[in-house]
Length: 109
Image (cartoon, rainbow, N blue to C red):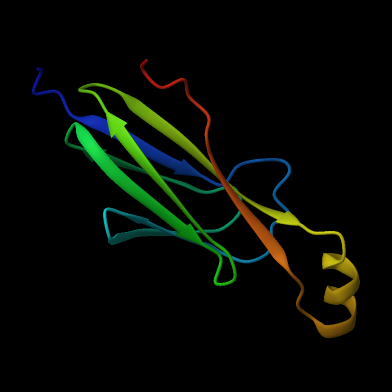
């Protein structure tokens, strides 16, 4: 096994992101970023298992990754509108925003 580190990037760069609410990201229990639309954060980690958690104060998502030495995991967090988001937003000033978290690179088999 190599001593090379692994890398994890969490981005909020999807054109499908509605740009509302911040996304709070943590890695292995430590806060690593508060992401606005268009931002990303990258951390170097030791090879092995890691847990990424993101939330937008309403919805929480969690993903566990097992990374090999030299591997770069790229994750995309997206705040998406629901069916009634903009109607409720216009009426109340806030509306439901749904959060997704997906891995966009191809992990090692």
